[in-house]
Image (cartoon, rainbow, N blue to C red; front, side, top):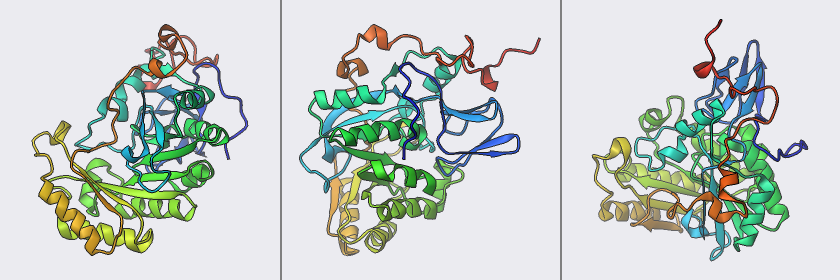
Length: 356
């Protein structure tokens, strides 16, 4: 359950919820990297930092994007169909996908560096303010997406708990490279998991995350379902990378055997981006073959999206559009309000002043 510490009115570092002291290191137990950090170091996601033996989340309440749209766009088709969800993201990810369309948000390295230096002008949105905005704009739920939710799990917990208390449902859009501890922590306040199954090829996962294994991702998805979260899965079909019909059929068979024959599987189209800009968009015939493989494996709810790739913010309206606050106020420089940080920011090793 979320802890009882008060929510900060102004931006400040918040202790990482799942951390473990190991000698002079502290281990983060949010995602399966389980980064072990000494003072001044940040984890792979760049959003958690060790300061004097305690891990802190740099990105608590820092919002990169907000958008309102149908829940089907997440994609989620079998939970509250026809309703509208407010999608919200921050910065940071546990993967480095070569075809990412969302680099500035999902990886967010520049934004997180600015937070570390105490020079960020990104919006800080307390959980209650996010919930109020969702209600004011007629949303039925809140989806944590665009960036990996495990990276700012502290905020997701607080916002999701308040959302449910206000009558809103909650959606968690994830790569599922997450620990069982994190899943068990969020399960009471998350209604829906929409998770990627990117491939069943170990090399595919190692390319985007050196420590990721297929069985870890699949185990996390199955564990979420066991915890009572409604689960829908998606595969972005990439030409020459994960479009083998036999392998796609094996994904479908895994879904059938571990989530149920009626568990939804969403097949989305790849569009060239970043390191995969040289590849063509997924041919419709390939998507149709994937759809057929899903049905042949015994799945009854297989959906094909010829015009949709990632769950990205489409309109990219300023965050201030959705909030009842002066944009100039939202854009004030964010420095941790706690007096331990000083005026130079967080003083990570990357930015520490030279010793006198």
